[in-house]
Image 1 (tube, rainbow, N blue to C red):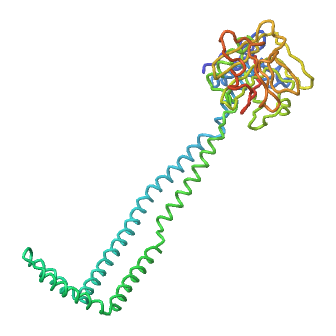
Image 2: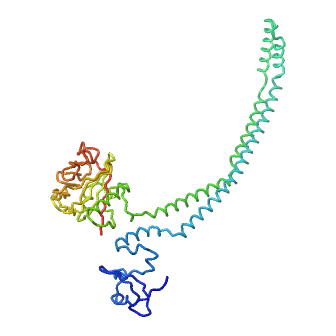
Image 3: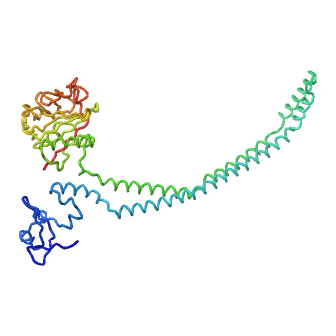
Length: 418
């Protein structure tokens, strides 16, 4: 980058941008000496290094905007590139090893299957031997000869022939009943026992390659979970988002608020979330007391999503008082119906209602009344907030989806504007 000479100090070069409320100056190191004498930090004195701006343009934003952008970008630095790449290399190595292990395990299982098939064939052969011995013991050829004789007679067979062969068959069956089968029985048991022992031996094999693969898979799964947990550290909590509203509708809401207030949205803080803080009046008032510019978002048990914004200050230690909105920027909204209900002119004195015996309440009447248990309440939409433009058929159930709020979720965001 070419050096820019400072016209105030000979031999010095411009390094900084000095931003004041009414003017901006390009200055050198010598120009900065008064600030150093006063022991002011660069950000206190409005100094920005030009090289820093060229690398990070967001530094030109206001301090609030700068902080918001910086905090957002800083989320990515929770895990550095070297760590990610190193972890990926580790996982890739494990994947390669697992792929190789699968091939080894496949060979191991094929060997096991072949052993089983060989044993099966061996046992089949042994059974065939037993069957052959059985045929010899029962003189099976006699039985076959009886059947052959009958077949040879064919259609010329007579009742006398059939009767003679039946008697021969009967005698044959009676003879084999008297045979001692113990020898055959014990032979068969012996073959079955041999097979059982061989199968037990086969099942006792440890399959070491399979066990190695299981350990590798466990290690890979553990590392995968660790990797995902590291990535989850990037929460983007600083990025403006809602737990209930869609991104599109939230952006619409912020645009409307900025337009009504004629201010630029800078940042937000989630001060209340029912899943953490609970759905009760005490938690609600503890979180909102003495706070303003609150965007309240609700989801009923019917799934209806609605809410309201007001710049007014919420005060808990009062027995019931309306708070006036001179900016006329308060409004109620329904994401379910994609509608905005602005406060009516002449009703700005009833923008919100503060009473510790009540929950969130908007409008005189009330347009939204939510009890401290977040279940009871009612809606008289159109009392202080305009809804005539939508020609609603039932203003009491339009927001909630039923006559009472029956809140399932609640979120409150405190907005900051410039």
